[in-house]
Image: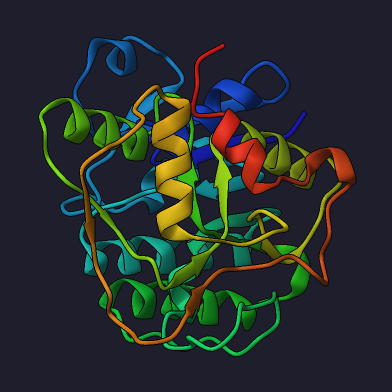
Length: 271
């Protein structure tokens, strides 16, 4: 049985992955958020990337798959990921790295595909690129890079923020000229499960197959949540449409694991 370590299993994406995988694999996680649920779970290990080195945990646990869903200080993350890369090079282990559409945020005229050149104007995007480039120098079977667009879901931070702003009479910031795709947390967990089971490798774009304007996506989500006329703050940062979207093309997953914008919108409501 595969032994999986999710680094950042107390976060939104990491915890959803833990819940999906723990019934099928010998699954462990790290946590930083101090809650009883994590402290009392014998398969969770406290880890502070700012003060601790992950090498000790890796040597003791000896995972065969590491999933990186950690957040926090960028310099600390770089140090942690380079320690993980050193470990997977020396052991029978691969890294699944959760990356972002922001690795392409300098390209605004078109959506991006898996093997397009990365270039970012943001600190966040450049940090993700640094980790990606280190992984791309490894043998292919040692890594999978999963680039995500905006992630939604009934209890996701983005949906909680939308609800809170509307309920407190605050404006939702929308971008009428930004074309995006998106995904939802339930589909991500299924996709990662498939990638692990089938030993997939390379670069994956786990966003919806179709595009929409960010303004339309947010207003459609607000409407399905029951808010007909939310207060909007429209931000025009360009005279033309600009794209921030990661479309799948080269590494397509099976149809039942693909997602559409309508799937994302529907997934924001608890059934």
